[in-house]
Length: 360
Image 1: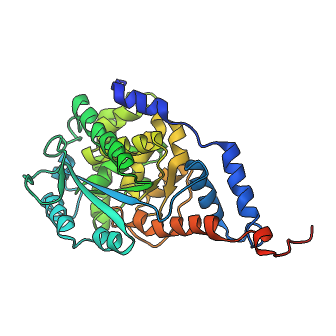
Image 2 (image 1 turned 30 degrees about the vertical axis):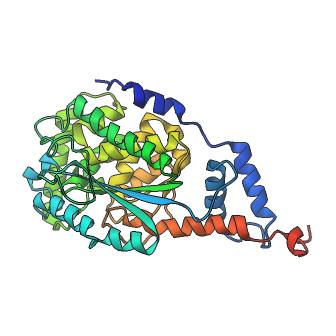
Image 3 (image 1 turned 120 degrees about the horizontal axis):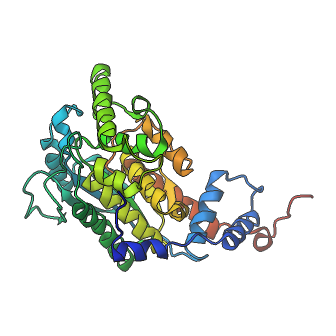
């Protein structure tokens, strides 16, 4: 089955253009004129050049940064794939709103606006101060027995991300990240990873919220059964949005919409860990040009993450042994990216500083 693209999504995908190779080369040439040995800033130079090329060669600093944390529940939790009960999703949403989670601390520390979005939490959260209510349904269906979402639900969840990408542009945001909260969503991400990367389920499945070794094996067996139900008769490269519909979650679909929408508006996107990269991999499978706007904030301890990064062709900035999610790894990478831009825009050139260039 092939998912029919809605008009807005189709227009969004068509609007995604690759970053100009000529402009990228000009940005790198500028870096080579700065008062330093050529290439001595390492990967910071590539980061700066890519970001400046995305911005068209001009950017106002400091950056206006936002992280969108999408929350949703998963029917697959009925199969014991998480160490925590489903109720933790709504409890953590309230923690986000109260300012007590890891993502709150890091967002405050690095001047990043935090937006918390209920896109499918299995609880009544209406009236919670500061919460963006965009709920599609109170949790996905159990993908072990049926598709996680109907096509209509998938389209609605994608539309949430597209809406927020549009809002980010109107707010003047020029660097965004996606975070997530959803008990059971590492199982969904593992299923998506196995299908897209063609890696064995056992290789891409990790302990998520802290499962024991035996519980991880049980989790992998459940995910394998999901793949056998939904993809045993599929072609070698099934439709990526159909993969998302059958084995994903509302928060993953919203993130897919967000990154597609942001790329169409030339807004750089910092990817967080395993879950957000699984959603980004779906977007990449839909439209590979989206990759030009991706930056991998870090590499997660979840084993499937490195396969997703290889699938997209991204090299992560940080390796800190993290697997928290919430957007924490992405927000940690933002000051590094802003530092790269400041070096690009504020360092003197050899000519302006009157410094001799290297002998050639």
